[in-house]
Image (cartoon, rainbow, N blue to C red; front, top):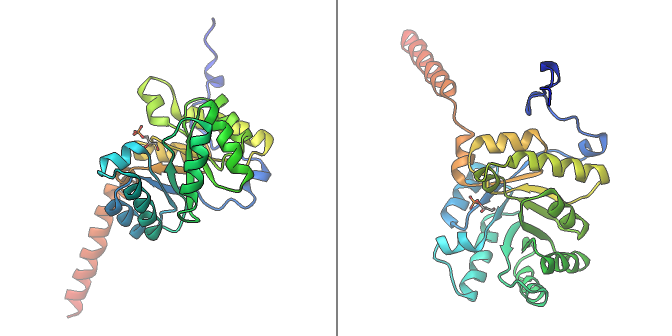
Length: 250
Ligand code: G3P
């Protein structure tokens, strides 16, 4: 196949995506969730003043040593006391009845709980059930546009494409976010695109460029957004000049 002429090769992030007028109405900010079960990290992120919610999963709970049904449930309540925003709590069951039972019980813990359901057949059925009952959901382990379309059709509140794990297997995770954005905008699906498996600050920037509604991030990726050497140098110079001027006046 002939290579495309240079002028036709559009760099992926060369220009901002044009959003349809319907998408710009009522959209005021990209949400940042923290992807951890660590109460200390959740508090630290909350103190930054830019946190909108929390996502957890069974691996993150295990990492914090949280096990046993009652401890897990109490941990979700503790998280809800720190952050006033959606808190994803994942079901462990993989059958429809089990997911419904677990999800309803988790949702009863706090109004901010979002029931996290895996992208499997029974999971999609459960999403539809929760959606009919007004229970918020997050469809997790999404790796394709087709899966994201199913989640939206079932009425998921959030869909979680795992961009870092796609990058790990030489597939473009951010490109999937872009595809889902196009599909949801084509039909006006209200399901929010929650970019998950975010690993570093450039993932966050690229997700913002292609219109993800939410990025759920490790604390390290959020903190990295603050840093620029020219900010540090510039501030040092401002303060040094201020001190010099003050010394002359004295
Ligand atoms: O939100 C899903 C996320 O926790 C997965 O991240 O880094 O394990 O791929 P990771």
